[in-house]
Image (tube, rainbow, N blue to C red; front, side, top):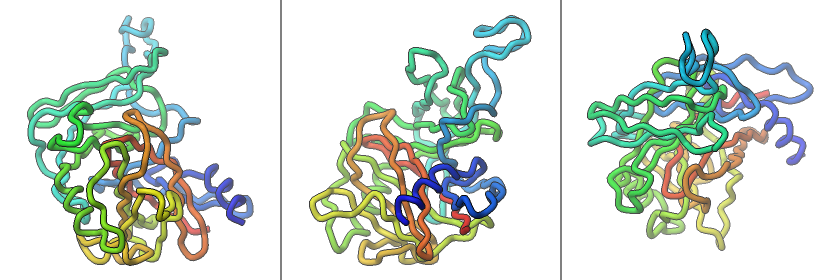
Length: 294
């Protein structure tokens, strides 16, 4: 049952604003949920699909293409905002310029990057085409003492503008210090990834009673998970989400940016839901997961 469910769900990731969706061979695929304008609402990667976005290097004789021909990549442009509160998500102006990175359409595989202006505006060209692109925002070389924690999020290139958020390191440090009472988290490991995820239904309503089963929490492993116990509060003494539908995962071992893929698996009402989330060491991935029951 476990393996069958995982295979079904891995092939049924929604391409809209959803990052987690349930579907099976016996039921019709549900329509994608409506667009999400929540500052923390982002989509999951689907590397098998391409399209969307604004072609870069196109037009009349533009670099990367002949007259009237689009270039290899797409353009992402928008603004970066500082998260002042994760739950409910609230944003504000950034403190200084930060770097924005995404996978390149070039064959060399190097990331494309841009530095924001003082107000947070950025523009990336020749970004790899996909229905959802994972974008990193931060300093990337600041180590464990930078003001911001590198923040990963998925964007739909077809949405305009492609706005992003960045999480202050102190906010996540304080959250971890206050949330883990069963097993104390002494520090956020700079060699590990962290994830903030909020589970919602297709209407955007928060989902209680969701449990994360992967990554697992094991005594011999550093990864820990805490669930919401009211607005802005979390605890590892409970085993499922509460009224806010939120959870925080800390100290998941991984590699530096661009990182790796975490298969996040959650259960609700004895059904399993899975999605791929990009994670990287010394980073936090911010995700809103839309669950559609079968």
